[in-house]
Image (cartoon, rainbow, N blue to C red; front, side, top):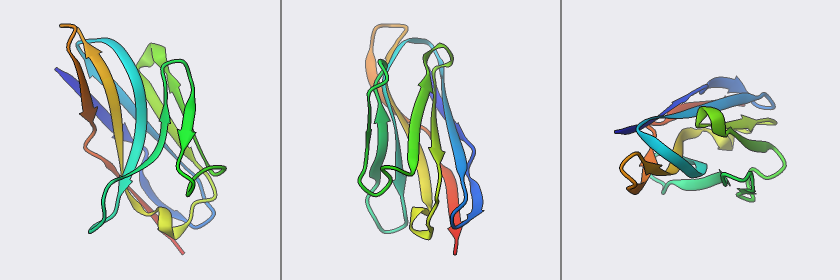
Length: 120
C-alpha cells in the first residue's frame, strides 16, 4: 500500500511565500516522476510542475519563475517552493507520483490535497 501525504498549505498574503511538501510512504521500490497539480472549484485540475527522478523539471507558464519544484529521493519527498504568490494561485494543491511498488507494480498515486489561499 502506497500513500502520498501533503503538508504546508495555508493562508498567505499576496506577494508572500509558502513551501509545500509531499512524502510517499509504504511498500515502494522506486518513485519515478513526481508532480504538483492544483484545482479550484468548478475547474479542471491543472498541472503546476513536475520533476523526474533525475531532477529534470517542467513548469506551467503561470508559475514559471515564481515556483520551484525539488525532491529528496532518499526521503521519497517532493517540495514546491512558491514565491510571489498571487490571489489566482488560490487552489487545492495535489501531489502526484508515478511509483513502482514492492510487488513490481507500477501505478499513479494522488495525495488528498492541501489548501493554499492567497489574499489580496
